[in-house]
Image (cartoon, rainbow, N blue to C red):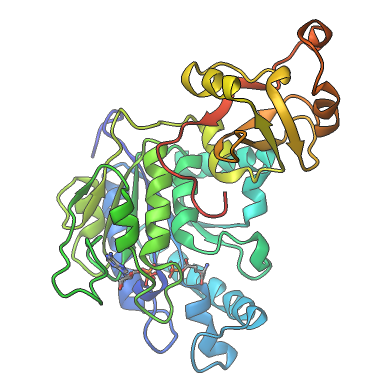
Length: 377
Ligand SMILES: Nc1ncnc2c1ncn2[C@@H]1O[C@H](COP(=O)(O)OP(=O)(O)O)[C@@H](O)[C@H]1O
Ligand SMILES: N[C@@H](CCC(=O)OP(=O)(O)O)C(=O)O
């Protein structure tokens, strides 16, 4: 049993192919293996949250489809069957070891609203602190494409940030990240440590390896960009390897470890929400002097440095910040609506004195990210 100091909060994401059989059914054997390993961590005193895919893969056969459906209504109907079956199996298995699982279904709009985001954190914290194992999936049955996370890899990274996890473990059908797509290059080499997501790594990341996988290595790399910018250690390994979860937490597993370094950006929770979840509602373009002030000097953005405004937003919205060449330099929470900012453009410094607040406070600016913001941001 670990002491309070060594206790970890671990998020484990498992893909569809690692939970279901080729015939579109839950594989009891695969699920039992996962549950046994989670139980080992729980018995050691760690907190564990699962992000489990598999709802569509576990449900499509029961819906009467011969292979994973491609139409949205059929996928959603399959998920409505499979999600219930998955939870039933998880609950049975965890209860047989004396632990309780709980279901959390999330949509992207739950995360883009700051109040709902904070509410999700509070709920999950209660569950984790009371020894429950929250089991998270996207709410596939009701979510439409435009509002989807789309893959559980980036969802798991955002959840890891939400609950301030120590580790994210992504389990897949492959034993880690290779320096080239192993299906295309027989000489591809396993990378055991990654300290930075380089353009070469992005290039090497290919599509899914099975008919039931969704994001492939590309969405896993997007996920690791989020965890690295959030200061969370991550691991990618093969779900079928013995003791993979336990060994990954104790750094003894074969796979790829993604280690954030102190020099990298380490976004606090508010900035993680702004960067990865908020969904910007408009744009402000700033002049060159302002770019220097906010990027190099890390000062607030003043209303007089706003050159022009695009889109309609209200006070408190998140906006993209562009320079005069159109390059995106960051995101921030505005203190004025788009109408108010437009009125301020062209006013002189004394005229602006009556406006007391910065357009964007430095504490709410997310700029100069070493990583480009992942898809969906
Ligand atoms: N550079 C790479 N390194 C490792 N696997 C890769 C790479 N590029 C593409 N892949 C493929 O990504 C697959 C894993 O993604 P995916 O099929 O979505 O799995 P899951 O269902 O576990 O999320 C692997 O089986 C592999 O074929
Ligand atoms: N939410 C979907 C899975 C989405 C997904 O990312 O799947 P996978 O690539 O297998 O992790 C489901 O439960 O079927």
